[in-house]
Length: 300
Length: 185
Image 1 (tube, rainbow over the protein chains, first blue to last red):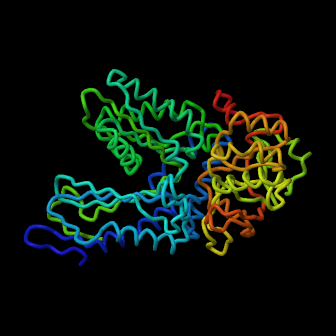
Image 2: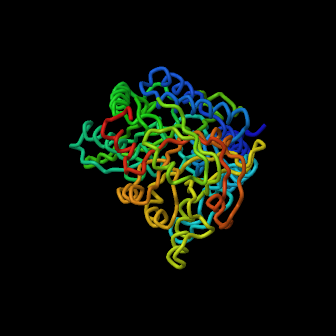
């Protein structure tokens, strides 16, 4: 039993989180998300460019090789983002951050993944040789539940991302324009077909997290609202009409999906963040205690 | 779509001149991995000594940082990184003898000009197929800069490694043509 119930709070063992981080990294690095693979197969049927079709077929063949041989889908096995959404009446005793870092180091070593983190962005660019530190977020949520998400974020797609503080007057069209501009300028470096995470609202710092969080949502699952779903669909059509295509070498599949998360914000603000997810967008979610089911115990 | 063109390395400059943007090329022979940190060192060496380090004249640079050996292959996964980060050094390295480069994404106008002047080609490799590409790498030898980890200089022996001509020796650029709406190049 990894979690023990006390009278009021449930203590979650950091070791359980560490174990899931380890498993999640190895799973994500060596196989496409099922929703991404499915979207790619559908795109193969609709892709208009012969070169684009060939590249989509290579991406699917690559997935088969990675899964068969347990090798990474991409040589950039990313920096690790661990996001823990913690519901009410839970506690995580001990040092969760050091447990997560231990799990990251072990997974990267055992999985023969690439160490891609330097000690300091500006003053010491030596490789840490452990892929640590992991970049961790703890979010406290209303309701009962515990959700662990792990995202291995590649450098190329993150570099192609953008954050803009728009004026509220820019509105929906301003957002659309900015996203299309970013895709046209940067998609080639982000390894299309893309999953594009969009955050709108919040504050300067939180909007980027919305965009990143949007990448975790499975393709084909419901958007947050009808308005969001409409805008997602509209943007996807516009992005795929650019002709950029798979690997930015031409075609009708520049993106597999656009996911939007919006939030309240200041009366003067319209923050926008665009986080590019590459064709090998690698993430995994573990609902250790599903939210919305308060009676549920921690399960594997 | 035309049949893939087989190209043996080190490459014959005349063979490079015959390539056009959009050509699918299968590379067989040696290439050298070099990326961000390596480019700084190579450029420093060139400025200090007036020639390229490690006899790289006539060779091809592959902008890549592989994962370790796995599944009985010398590298688990290898694929292109974003080439534009190497733009600062490319014209100088090509002038000093680098024959071609392999990466992903658009290059600077200066690099296109340099390809035209020096008779160099820029090959695009597809990002996100690194397990597949690794199956076309027969050998990987560490040459230098081990302290850089994945960014070390490695000599790879490729076997029918698939790439697409993105900038040819006439200075034509596939990415920019696609951007302008000419999708079937």
